[in-house]
Image (cartoon, rainbow, N blue to C red; front, side, top):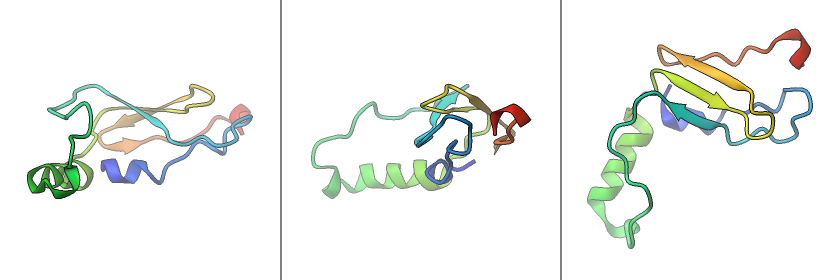
Length: 90
């Protein structure tokens, strides 16, 4: 799953969830990422190239997506998030 794809996913269809966005990403392995935005990032070409790489070229292979309201975990296996719900969750 590309990180940019994460922006389209929601758990709003869960019973009792109103917004369900954004889903928290919990990763098994994290590469080198900055903890915060740097100052003057708009004109820092090196930083913008790194952000482009992370958003469009990095794949989340294993981990989970967590609903911010219910805490429901959706596993990511081999790059595919499993967003299927159980009958009692709908």
